[in-house]
Structures are given as structure tokens and as C-alpha cells.
Image 1: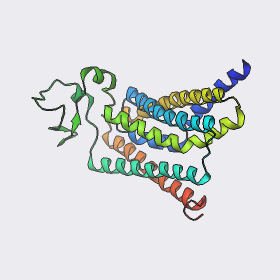
Image 2 (image 1 turned 90 degrees about the horizontal axis):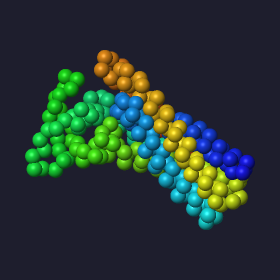
Image 3 (image 1 turned 120 degrees about the vertical axis):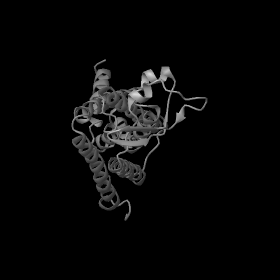
Image 4 (image 1 turned 180 degrees about the vertical axis):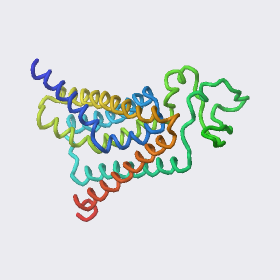
Length: 256
């Protein structure tokens, strides 16, 4: 029983710690900067964690139960995919900041305006921050809107997808750790599940906390809010470029 409790606690603590990895924080920061609400940040972190856990459990479970191995080159290639994604997320965040493009405000999604007989996906002009433009967007059903109105279905899928990519990069190391410490495959699988739960909890806490400065500056200090958004994009871009160099040349994925 003591051994089982140790497995659970180890998985939970390492999962929470894993959520604080710089590449994870940089990726979700580019998303959170567009959703400056505490509840939105928590949901984004939860969906990121779900995507991450799906990969960890799937790939890690296959390694444990089927005795699969992942070569060093494959592991580096998966980490490279994360670095490229950070560059892409950072670049898009910078472009959106310079263009003044941002998410459709929740009050607009909740407003009862006419869709005529057309589909719920539509676009019409409106003004905010002194600029008149349009946002193509989707009006979900009222039931789904009540649950996801602060995030939106496209953002849910984006968060899950980013979590899946990050899970691919970390699944080999996590599974090898399990194999080296837990001989029973059932307890090893349980460890992966608890590790995933810890990652979800950790990322929820991190992303919720990250929304605070954006929430405080959204209305009264628009220039500071835009600067924070620019900063998240710049950090993600720079970290991605650094990781590409580190993986490709220092660890010799490109030259080895």
C-alpha cells in the first residue's frame, strides 16, 4: 500500500512540475494573452493538459505494455516539432498584435443578434478600441456556449492540439522513467494517468494566474496590455529559435 501511495504522489508531483517547463509556459502564454479572463485561462490550461495527457498515456502506455523503444533521433525530432510550434505561435501572436487583431469579445457571442437563415458561422463589422473591422466567427449552440463561452470551440481544439504536440516530445522520457522505477505494467499505467492529472492541475493553475496581468490592463491600460501580448509572442519566438539551434546543432540532430 505504501508503494502504491508513493507511485500516486510521485506521479502527481512530477506532473505538476512538468507543467512549469519553459516551453509549456511559453506556448500557453501566447494563447492566454488573447483570453484575458481567469476562467478562460483555467480552461485553456485544462484542455492543454488533456491533449498532453492523451499523448502521454497513449505513447507511454504502448512503450510500457508493448516494450516499444524510441530512438534518440526520434526523440530529438519530436522535441524539434515543439520548437517549431513555439516559433509559429510566437510569430502569429506578434502579427496579431501589430495588426490589432484579437478575439471576438464574449459579450458579442452572447448577444442575441439575427443570423437570418444562414449558418451560425458568419462575419459582420463592429468597432472596438476605435477601429472598425470584422471577425469571422462561429456561434455555437446555447448549451455549448454556456460551457465554453469564455474560450470558444476553435480555441479548445487549438489548446488540445498544442498539448498533444508537447506530449509527443515528453512521452519518451516519462515512459523511460516509469520503466526504470515501476516493474508492474498496471502500476506504471496508473502512474501515467496520475502524472497526466498532475499536469492538468498544474497547467490550470499556471494559465489562470497568467491571465491576471492581462485582465488588469485590458481596459484602462491598452498600451500595456498590447505590450504584454507582444512580450508573450517575442518570448515564444525567441525560445523556439533557441531550442531549434540547441536541438539541431548542439545535440546534433542536423549534423549528426
